[in-house]
Image (cartoon, rainbow over all chains, first blue to last red; front, side, top):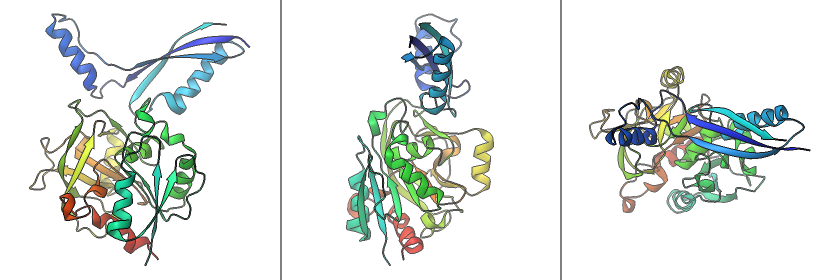
Length: 85
Length: 233
């Protein structure tokens, strides 16, 4: 069965205070990057997943996000890339 | 009257001994130690999920513990209407397990806060935990957490308030729920909530660390006494 590298982005939901993102946005402003309107900091997860197809690997990753990897109350996730196979 | 408390220990729990002390040495009741990999509650009437850093807070606080083998039994216990209480990390586990709504996020200050706070008893739907307190009673209880900011959508918050499920709120010494009295930026100063049936309580503060004057306060003890009076047989 082919192996796929699945890249997942998880970020705090817009509108919820993200203290880490706010600290980074403030630091960027202090460095003169006045164009930064907002920063949110989440996590990037890379999974190596065995599957019949890229679609199957993506579906597996989606199920994993819904069950464990992301908190539906506070976070949004995106399967950013499925590579390999 | 007697009562058996089951105190769960996950890898990384560190307040299980505090709960043990409160139950055995101060309340004078029986406790059994439940390891995260266990599959039965050993006859526990009340389950306590203690504070700490289960699984090193990997992914999110409580996210991994929620899938521990013992949690299958804890969830079944709660669904039977039996009492389950989570302090600090235990509250985070209860939210992750969907036994309670909402989530706990990083403190608004970004800082770990270890301090004494004032709480006001606001809950009305969970006498098994709150019966020995007067409505609106002010308590002095310690907190120690970095991720204690309770969040939920507005509809959920309104529902919690409307159903008397905000068990405890952070207040100042005069009993007012001000921003200054809110140690972590929790929505509506919420420190603890109960489920709709009133048999599951989660709270960030540590009543198990405030059970005798030697510890600086005994204001946490009535929570255990309520359980003994209402659940003990």
